[in-house]
Image 1 (tube, rainbow over the protein chains, first blue to last red):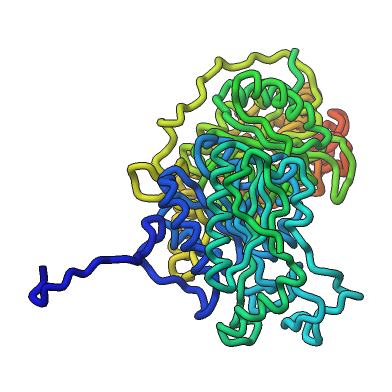
Image 2: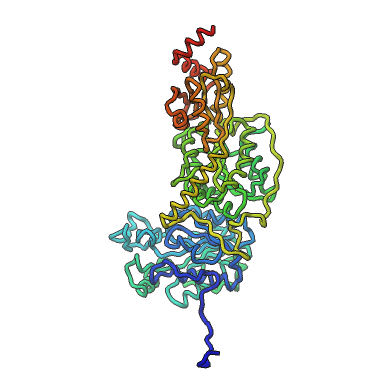
Length: 263
Length: 360
């Protein structure tokens, strides 16, 4: 009891699976939300101490500094291969990679296809913000047609640079995939759906159902040249039409656990 | 009778190798095939990766889990592994690799070569690092060095590469396999390994030091480790160097061929001996320096354009003339060719030729 007779109760705190430190991410970036969702899910499942993460090359290259769990830092695009080695030698542990769009869909395209084809029991958290963040805003494999970046200064011309890679659509075709869904981090309702999807993916991995991936449409206000709220709106107005949210593959035995949507 | 590729794969199994990741490439594929049968049979991990790029990163992951792990490949495949090897060196996880070298550059061919010397011995990937490199000349040495490579890799937390060639990989000769060691138990994995942070602080395996000051400190650590390796792990074999006026220096298969030539040149009255470096890193510079102080000339024989030759020069420091004989592109030197080179070196040194005349 304090002198005023008031009792303070903590109703919101950092998840135990996150380090009690700040991040290097830009203001308005959704990496922090994605990190928190993963940490909350690990805490709620009580598996943080039985989980190994693999960080990518990209803005989230330092993810291992922010999670209070065992972590490896992979070469650019190779996180699925490194995670394969970790999982095969730690079959009872949860293993996840955290990868951006350049890492996963460009330089790591072969590794992500084959980890899915093998039905490797890992979970991939795929952060798609349609741009290379760490190197300062170049065209990504998921950059939208017409989108301006520092390496497509007049807008992505599909005649010369091709089309955005739709990885959920591709990976859902793999027989080894158990759970492939796309969610968005642009508002609270969608953030809650994203968390549910992460829970389902990790649960599917625990059950040994196969390869699982949760793609999260994310913002990059710095490199998109927008304010934080404008960037969130841009996800909704521009990214979702190209990258429709929904469940692209759900293993039959996940049935009730899903709670997904197809918009 | 054991074929080299099968022999080193089985030696790895017996060394307690818990996981093998690889990709088919001639002339080492028999190793991958052997592992595909043996490892599952023993309840261990075998996985044919989608590429050598993926294979070495699977090795990286498995090594980060604290398990004994290896891959094997041949020259073009090893080139693809260089990125991963640099990361592995930068993370100090122990890894064993066998490179069964073939003719190059490019796709080249599948015949024996020693053309990967520079890439393997000098590091190969980006940044300052050196793997321990062992060069066998017989199937028995290929077995013994692969077996020991795991201990060396773990002792120094470094990469150990057994540098063989297509000749050794494909050759069948009598050899003995070492005893079977058990696989390390999960609870005995090293304290730094990624096994889930149950009851301890989290571990991180990473090659990032974003602050150049810290990166330099780490580089100094690697340099100190290399110095320790150079102080402890130099290996070489010698033949008839006691009274030699000429020395042949050759490694691996070239060293084995040179051995025949040294014997025939001895029979022709030339006092010649052989130095066969076994450890290519650390390199026996000091032994070559000692030799250069007492022989009159040196012949370097390689199955490449003269890659180890640079290291011999570093040891000789201009003290005596060096002659080079190399076959390239998958061509293997014949003993009589090397014999002729020894005789030519001998003839080019007038004081030796006249001395031999006087002895007659």
